[in-house]
Length: 141
Image (cartoon, rainbow, N blue to C red; front, side, top):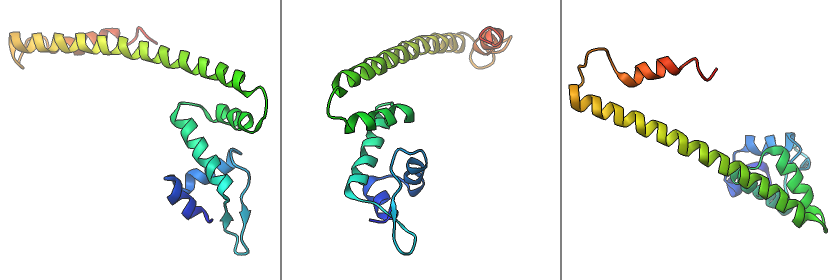
């Protein structure tokens, strides 16, 4: 199957498939007499595996590792468990960071709403939230 059909079947772009090949996530496709890449059913399964692994948050290096594990007969379950434990820890950390961000933004929103209720849009001294952000701007650097 040529790359255009593979792209259509997998929902990816031709450039993405070429990128996977360039990154050595896929073995080099054989070529037709006209120089077109030809992909097998196994290649399509590998492409779908790569795509799903990316959707699960695995990096390209991790996906290379997963592809190796996928082809091994033994020992892959415990290694996969370790990778998943690590990935779950990363996701939990991101969730905690997002919750903290949500609380910060909600607090600033309440400040804006209070200020608008008290003074309307025309308030002396400008927007308190903009002033707070400007004061805190250099603290994280």
